[in-house]
Image 1 (cartoon, rainbow, N blue to C red):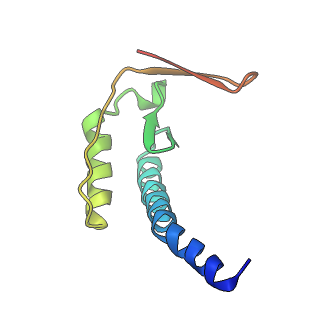
Image 2 (tube, rainbow, N blue to C red; image 1 turned 90 degrees about the horizontal axis):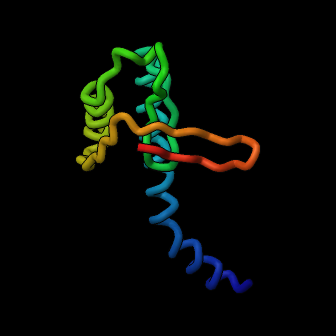
Amino acid sequence: MDARKNHKEKKKTHLSNTMMSLESDIFHVILKRLYAKKIICLNIHDAIVILDIEKNKNVTCEEVELIMKETFREYNLVPTFDIEPKTAIAVDMSSSNVIITP
């Protein structure tokens, strides 16, 4: 591949790669803060899932949202959130299917 063409291709993807890296960094910080509060959770793409288990019985959506907003604010970002409380997620490991039920 021509060096100039390769440079142009890298230039085209630089912004999107930088944004994905930033999002990953932010979610890493959010998860660390949730874990520090003993909140059992995981992330799926651009979502944080708080597991519906006994250890999380006192966790509120507001508490999680506050941690997320504070973290984004540290990066000078103000995102919008869609909170979907009481959504059950079942993962079928045998077929790699994720089943979401309201």
